[in-house]
Image (cartoon, rainbow, N blue to C red; front, side, top):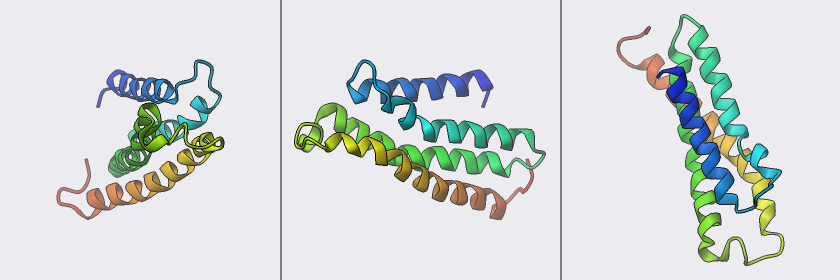
Length: 124
């Protein structure tokens, strides 16, 4: 994937997460972007190595982390099940979602790396 397209994708996801949180100046936006920053670091490191298996792991991380983060942010944005308005402490979920997303991303990284490592056509 070209670097410009990848950066545009990450900025698009970040913008979606920011808008989904529904607050103009939200300090949680940077914290909620932590899985995206981790993905970019993994991708940049994997791209710099001769062994491209880590790039597969990085995309596994992105898929795993966004599989947790995006559904929560959609539910938050649309207030599904009164997730945003149902409790005075519901915003605390914004503290923990990036942690859960990074855990799911770690599992995705391992799966992506294993798929490439154990799959046919090792190497590139």
